[in-house]
Image (cartoon, rainbow, N blue to C red; front, top):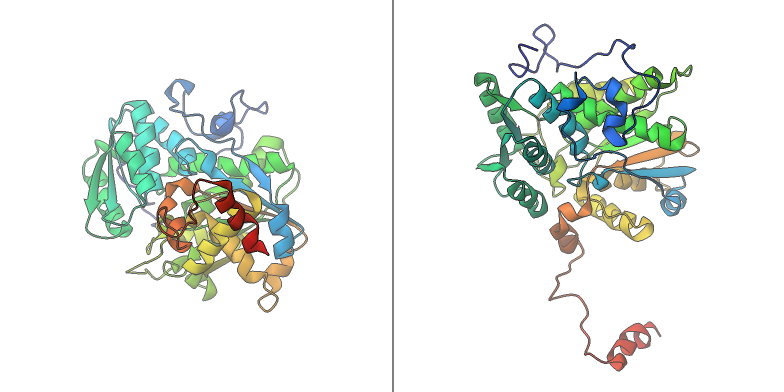
Length: 404
C-alpha cells in the first residue's frame, strides 16, 4: 500500500487498477451486520476497527407489477439506492473508500462531483474526522446535493468548467501531493463497496436476475455490479455460472459509452460539451468507460441513450405507478424500458427480457433534485397549482363538478 493514492491506472496496460480476491478470504457464515459490511470478508479492509459507516446498504428491492404490465415484462424490480444515508448509491463505495483512507493514515480527501459524490464524501469524511474538498462544475449541481455537502462541512470549490475538468484537476492534485487522497470512482476501493448491491439483489430475489439495467455516467457502478455478480460464487459455493446481462443507459446529450457500443467499439469518443438535466450522468469523458463497456460486452447486455424528455416522463411514471420518487438519472433505465417496449420499437433485446427477471437500479432519491420535477411538470408552488377558497363548496367544484 506504499503507492496507494499516487496513481490509479496500471503502468503496463493503462487501465484502471482493480482489487482481485483470491477466492479464499470470505467466511462462509455471513457477517452479523446488515448492508455493505455484512460482506466484510469480501471487502479489502484489514481491520473492522477502521470501518467508517453510516449503516449504508440493505436497500429495498421493490417488485413493480404495474410497470411490468405496462412494459409487457414477466417481472420487474427496482433496487432503490435512494434509501442510503445520503440518498444515493455512492454511500456503498464511500464507506469503503473512506475506511481505507483512515486505515492507511490519510487526513485529507478530495473528489470531483456532479452532486452525489460530494454529498457522500462530505458525510463520511465528517464521520471519520477527515478534511474534505469537493470540486463541482459551477452552476451545474442540483441544490439538494450541494446543500448536503455544505451541511457536512466540506470545502466546496466551484470550477468554471464541466465535471471532466473537475476530475482532471482533482487527479493532478492528488497525484502531485501524496497527502490528499482522491475518492472518485477510479479509486478501486470505491468499487469494492458498490459491488455489494449485486450480493443484496441476489439474496433478495433468491437467484441471480436475468437482466440488470443501470443509469451510466462515469461507468463505475455498472462495472462494480458486474464484479459483484462474478464474485457471488465465492459466498455461496454456487455451482451455476449464470450471470445477468448488464445494460447501461445514458442521457442523449452525454452518451459516449452508448454511442461506442452502437458502433461496436471498445473505446469511447469524448463528448466535449455534455448536456443533460439529469445532472448525475452529465459526464462526457467517463473514466471507467472501458470497464463499463467490458461489462456490457462480456455479459451480452446493451447500451443505449434516452432523451431528457423520456427521462422525466419515466421519473413521473415510476412515481405515479409504483410510489418511488427517484432523481432524474435514476429514471433512465425505466425510460429505456418504455422506449424498447413500444410495439414499433421491439427488438431481440426486448424479447430476451420479456420472460425473465429484470432489475433496474435507481441510484438516487428524488429529493436530491426537486426543482427538476417542478420544471418538467410545468408547476410552481404559487403558480400552476390549483387554489381554492377555504370552504367545502369551492373544493366540491374542483373534485366533483369538473369531473362531470
